[in-house]
Length: 165
Image (cartoon, rainbow, N blue to C red; front, side, top):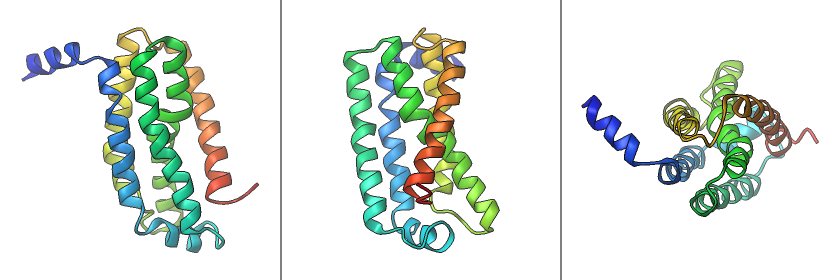
């Protein structure tokens, strides 16, 4: 079993595994879609609308599919750094903190929590590990990417959900 995992992971590189991200993103959107707008109206922003949700998340689906396409043609350190910084880490790592934090803070399930706690960590850790192994990221670049991604996600949620600015 361990040998099979090693063989599979050595044959399947980052350029192919990155397609797990759009799948994870769509699963997350499907979990959120029926209830997130009502949750946001009650706990985050009374002016939040389904149109707001759809605008942000349809754009997210487009980016989630476009990113692996770009990576499959331009699999270099710069493109992978941009992907991790502005796409994968904000969505698949910092979104975990948003959903878990909101659930704890408000004492009620924040739609998206289940995929944020199950699917996203697996995809983020796997893609991070493979990108590091293939030399598409370095540890220092990962640290920089992580910091910028956290700020980017904070700004995104502040603007798109809480409408702070």
